[in-house]
Length: 87
Image 1 (cartoon, rainbow, N blue to C red):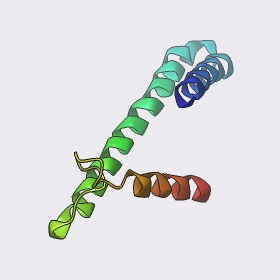
Image 2: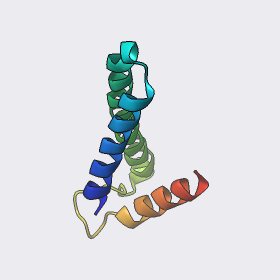
Image 3: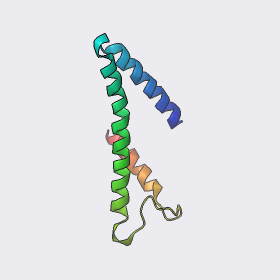
Image 4: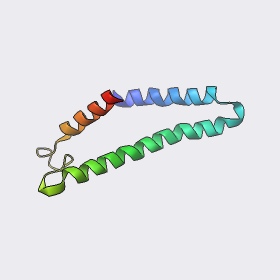
């Protein structure tokens, strides 16, 4: 479901940047559109790396441990839900 929503979001943003930007700046508009997804991916991987380092300190298992019985992915999804509700 998330993948389908992502596809519709990408198409909608492409249409928005293509229609709302003047003809002379359409290539810059499309570049800005694609840079949104690049920055979002970078920030997502940065957040995961920081959470992994913070939660694995002091000998505890990380939220993203290789053993799914010890990992706490539920904490990560709760964190994402809280950040989304704050946003």
